Image 1: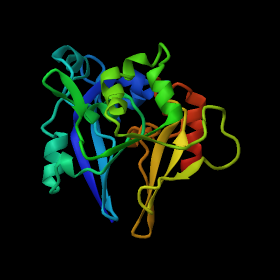
Image 2: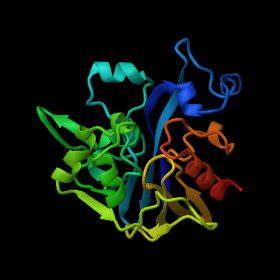
Image 3: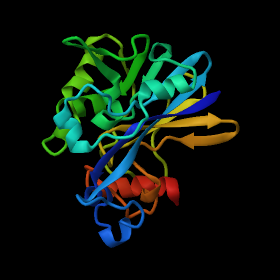
Length: 252
């Protein structure tokens, strides 16, 4: 197995929203805000090569939105999905599987590209993986989360016929016990995943067995190293107390 870091650029989000109840006097030392209270965040993905498969975990924001959209999020930096893949000797056509932890635009925006007036899959040879519970949540969004689920990022995946769902249980109810639901991916032997629902319903966290160690891609359960302390929970999270409990299962 080989793992590759895939950098797709940086964007900005409001620091207060990112750190929730944590005072700015504390979080500003960890990720200093600009004059508009915005902090920079990496759009960093992971590429897994194993058993003849090339699996891309998330794919960043993409580049098909208009200038107004990108103006809200200050997309910046020299890294792109294509350049990062090429740096490691790959192209988008080499990807066999796209594992979407969840369908917020900053995690799945690179799934779809514009081809003239059409919206088509960026990874034409890949299977895209989600789950029924999260797909329903994303395609029938609540008012609070609707702005993060963009139809142009989501629906063309299904229309292409390249979408498959993992069979999982809904985890939106409060967690009990001392473990999270874990599922085999069925893609390669060394890849399984957990489901968590504090940030959004049925987000999937890939678990990778790598050279005798276990790696978990934490997606937006831990959006940055600055969010490791338990109370550091985003205001974006749908169910912050569930996030707190899910973090605790990993960190304590």
